[in-house]
Image (tube, rainbow, N blue to C red; front, top):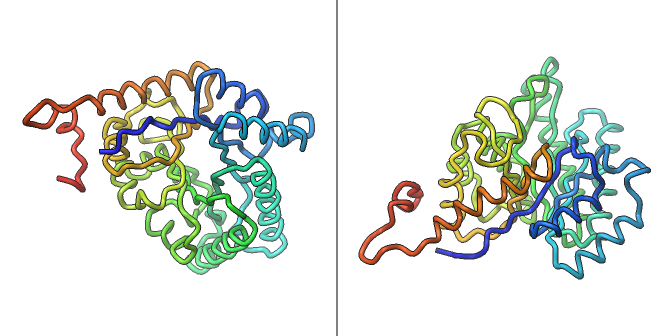
Length: 295
């Protein structure tokens, strides 16, 4: 097994009251490995964002070696109307420029969607094609930033989405070799109840980053790990067994204390999984979290 340090960062949700710089300070204060910034309202309002802020973050990134990620805007890159599609793509290309300025390593993007009341197989197929074309444009302009398509929240009933199941996600990126996935563990729990199986089916080697948060399997609550029903021990065991190194960004709506509590919970489990195995056998902890792919 790979016994590396568990790379945990933060990805504050849109309810977070601070700025991108406040996130950097939180990250440094508590020893997180990096930040994923949402290039979206309210964080990019003129009174909370500026090019000078981006340049300041870039300096700290170089000094501290932070893992910087950018979550692209929540625009619909599968839009069926050309002018809306182009506006959505332009928003992402602008965000990618700032991601490069900050020397970001990863970039998260949501696939497209159709309003459910209008969705039929033909329109959803067009939405998928438009999403692929948008991703192709991003690859052309993305430089060294690794693009990850996120498995979307399946619980938003008003939208018919083209990227939340494993086959859908592979259909979007399999022809785009540089593009991988941002695994949202909470979304996988809501969809399947088994994020570990989703992790295996998606392909650990294609995952660029992960959003980690908890829920009860019914709603996308974005709770700190340990506050819901996700089997984090099993997930971390799979992460360890596969020798993964992608960052685990805590995507929470809560306070600074919530980020610290979620981080500490995961680190405790990680330390237990890395305890030396007693001579001549396998530890009870490993047996209890056996990876089905290596049985």
